[in-house]
Image 1 (cartoon, rainbow over the protein chains, first blue to last red):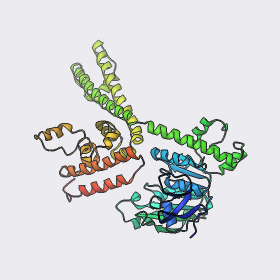
Image 2: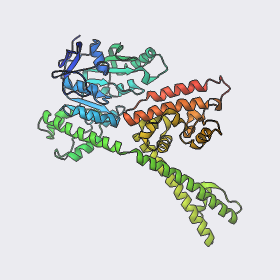
Image 3: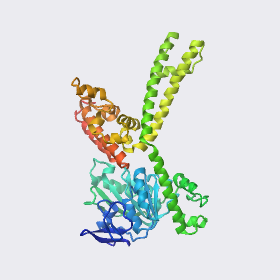
Image 4: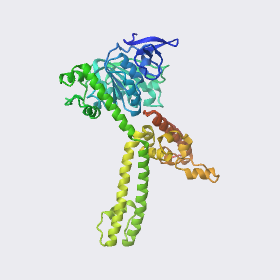
Length: 213
Length: 279
């Protein structure tokens, strides 16, 4: 698998890890201009570290749902093009604003990812849709936002089993979520994010050809 | 067809840009950068992205400030005022009912009766006074409703997880009893469990009563809906989750929908303990 342009493996204290070039955001280790992208703190980082074929090449237009404090989205903005970061909770958006400060094409949006109409007047069609939201109905959120994806675009989704149902078997939850996703997407790959994140499934998908917005 | 955020905007009007970012909407996305350049809003796409960044950043800052401005002090005052309005309305309603009884055999009771009287036509000077007093009761009752609506709206902003778990009014009462969200977040779960049952707690500490099993959290369905034999367990479980919710709300502020599911699971386990003889 190939890493996107702008993401490299670097040595941090004798450990090799992913890194992007940009201003440090959350006290991560640095090697010159490169800062470590900790896969234990980022689902997308874990997908790359585990060698999932994300199709990322670097320079893409990105819509990121569930940006939280900006840990992952800051790395994305380091190697991607225009990056729209949607987060609903006000307090983490404070940190997101700090992460956006030195990044000229990271656009913070305090919006609810379940209501794409509330930011469709701002966000352009994108090459990559990244989603990491911890609410029930994660597949529905992805489906509702499918209209943002260009025909050759990709969805990079992290599903948290416990957000759907804490009591159910994660494998059953993942199956349900994937079935719902197939209404709007064609699943290309899915893989457990262990050992970086327990009970999380990483999914790579493209928009369904017969899908309509 | 829907328009982008920049439609009809003066490129130098920052305030209007922030407003449309925050309040605007569109049915579907479009090639906004190109359209903005075509419309003459921006010189080129780089210029567009600069403007977009300035507008989105300012909009996010403003929205964060507004939503955080809903502070816990205002919530505490609102929930105490609501309690005062309700209590006073009930006390005055009793007075109105007592007075009304002396004048009419079919006088009712409570705020409902005051509402009837307030709408009636007084026939003599005394009747005018009763009717006017009844109107105060109705006003107070309506003010309590408006305060409740305010709490319903602001508690989820002040303490999103706590409000989701406890309901807005109970969340506000807990914050009020603890004296603020920060001090609630710093209380041990066992204290949260008996907040509002201070009299019973001190009676217990003096050695003259059993320990209270729950305070104000008794109003929560998880406790009230549990068989009395197991209410202590339910109250302990609920207080634990509420304490965690208050801490997340104070220290981090993001939403953790897992908490509700974890609580439901725990309460279900407790309620099924009786093996059927609980209700």
